[in-house]
Length: 185
Image (cartoon, rainbow, N blue to C red; front, side, top):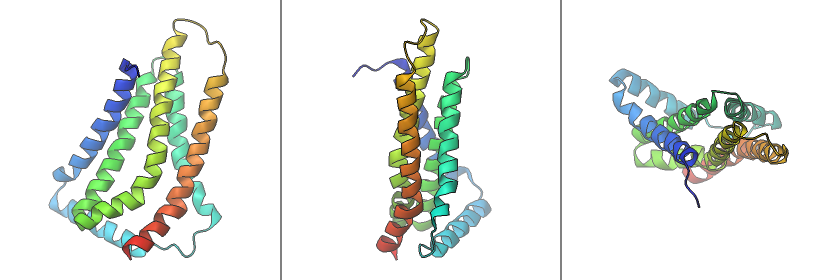
């Protein structure tokens, strides 16, 4: 596998985002830390899987789809390709922060909570974001050298991305909460 600069930049955006997000709770005030821990506790206690309707998937589809569309758009527009990397960084930072707060609030059990509630859908969606950013930035950089041969690969990539958004949304809406209740209650 050939490592080019874009692959390294995508990996660095995700890695630095995860680390900086995980370190962020260290810089919170004691009051903010306590308030977030209370909010997380209320979230965990109030997690209800009994009345999840089909409409509950829509907010996740919109959230994941919006990020995918922004990465796609930033990668395709001239002089904004590296804004896609910034979006990857921010998404990874939010994930790292959420996991770190779960661990800070619940200790070792928080690691299991974070893995169950955030891990499954992010194992699906983060690689889709990363590959989309890599491919679209690479494609845009190639457009400066030569015109596109066909739009087939780009349409295929977007179709796979949209399918991944739906799968991650279903996992986030149904599988993660149900698995959480089965494992931790």
